[in-house]
Image (cartoon, rainbow, N blue to C red; front, top):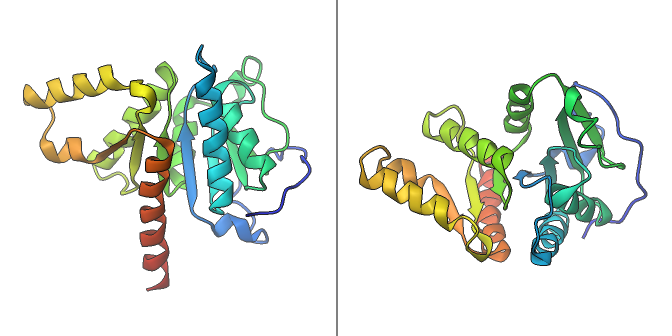
Length: 214
């Protein structure tokens, strides 16, 4: 487990992470999830579990920089356990989505498109937790990127407590109607628990490390 640390002042920068911090070379997981906590207290607990698990595995977290909602719970838990956390946010969102204090790195971009581009550049894998329309947009962006070979990074959807059942039903309908091929559908990894999602990510991280050593 990484050592805990005191919160630091966020660094506003658009440059590549400094190689002086050895944690910048760690496996990086981008987490997409809601800027609200939702009504069920289990969501917050699952967010905490996710952030802690990322830190305990000595991975880096990349996310949307906000301090509120499920995304804030994930990031705060990761920071509290010593993980390196990078937040990326468009400048116009800062007034309505305050940035979480203590981030190791904060990148302020101009548009949501730039935000997603930087998330894809800085991450080795994507984990999707419950969220709203922004989370759905991010999910489909990275899944489409995987389908069109814009990147080869895994996309894991954590269907916690059946939250994404209606979406998965739609995906099955699209495949049944011929608008989605079995190969395209299979590129989205679906799990039903945080534990299972992290196990799948661990396999990807192990493969990633092996490739880097060869």
